[in-house]
Length: 169
Length: 155
Figure 1 (cartoon, rainbow over the protein chains, first blue to last red):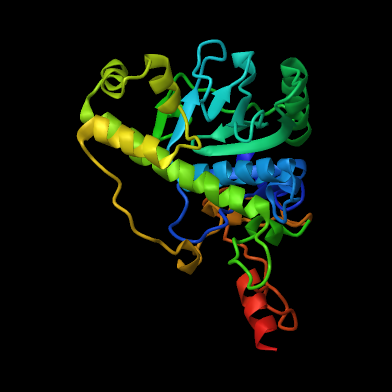
Figure 2 (cartoon, rainbow over the protein chains, first blue to last red):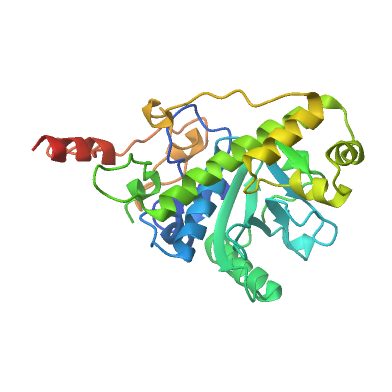
C-alpha cells in the first residue's frame, strides 16, 4: 500500500485535507493535518493570545498551500532563525516544523513530506519550553500510527521536497 | 469527522459585531506574507548583496538578514525604506476582495478524490474511477457560512 493509499483511507477521519479559507486558483501544494492540529487551525479561534497564534498558523499553512513564498532550512544547526519551515534534528527522521513566530514565542507544527509539495502536519506545540527530542518522538509515533512502516519523503535537496517559490535560508 | 470542517471559509465582518481577534491574525499573516514576497522578489531581481543593502539602509547586515529571512510585522516605513534602497521602488497600492473570488473547483488533489468505504478495495490506478460521495436527494447541499449569513439577514 502506498502513502497515498493510506492517506485516502484516513482522510476525513484521522487526516484532513486543509483547504485554504479563501477561494481562487487551484492550489499547487497540499497540506493534510491530523485531527489534533485541525482543532487549532479551524475557526472560531478563542479571543486570546493562543487564538491569535493558532490563526497565524492557519495563515501560514494556507499560504504554503496556495504556493506562497516559503523560506526553508534543511540543516537544523545552520539555519536562519526566522525560517518559516525547517527540518528538525535528527535529519534522518525527516521531521520538519512550520514555525509561526509571531506573537512570540509562537508555535511549532510538526510533520513530514509524503511526496513533493505535499506535507502532513501531525502534531504541534507552543514554542515556550519545548523539548525537541520529545516532540520529534511524538511526531514519529503519530506517523507510525497512521503510516506504519512507510517512510516520509527523503530528498537530496530542497527541490525534491518543494518545486517552486521557496528560498533556502 | 465531517470533512467539511476542513473547508471553513473566511467570512466577512458582521455588522454590529466585533471581529474575532483570531480573524485579524489570519488576515495579518496573509498581509505580511504578501509584503515579504513582494520585497524579497524585488531584492532578488536587483542582484544586490545583503551587505550592499545594509550599507544603503545604514543598518547592520544581521538586521537585513533577519528582515529578508521571514515575514514580520514590518512598519510602512520599513517597507518603503527597503523598496527604495533596493531599486528606488515603491509599493503600488490597490485593494483586492479575495472573498469575492469563485470557489475552487478542486478542493483536494485528484488522487485524494478517491473515497474508500470499508468495503472498497484499493485498485490499480488505471482501473479506479473517481468516487465522489453521492448525497441522497433529501440531504440539503452544504452551504457556505456566507450563504447562511445572507439567509439569516434576509429573515
